[in-house]
Image (tube, rainbow, N blue to C red; front, side, top):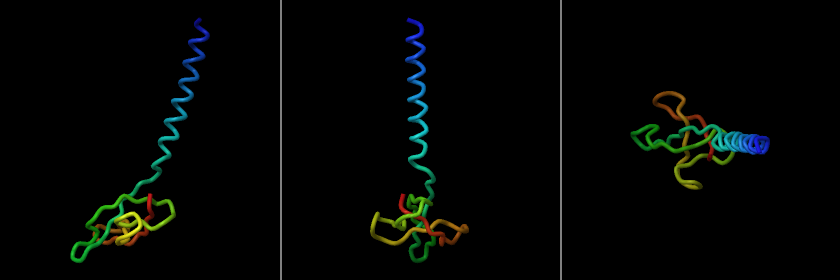
Length: 82
């Protein structure tokens, strides 16, 4: 009975380790993008990514483009949709 219990424990550990590693890769590198409105630079936060693809925008496919901060008051670094 003991060898069966050890085998089941080993298999369970392997699956748990694999699922934890897969989950960590789902959200690789989130980064905040910011949309500038007149008189308020980098004022609206938007969740973006550094993985190349479509440009990150305030609303999924529409709206102003979001940029990452390259200094405390300017946002010009291109970021992408997560």
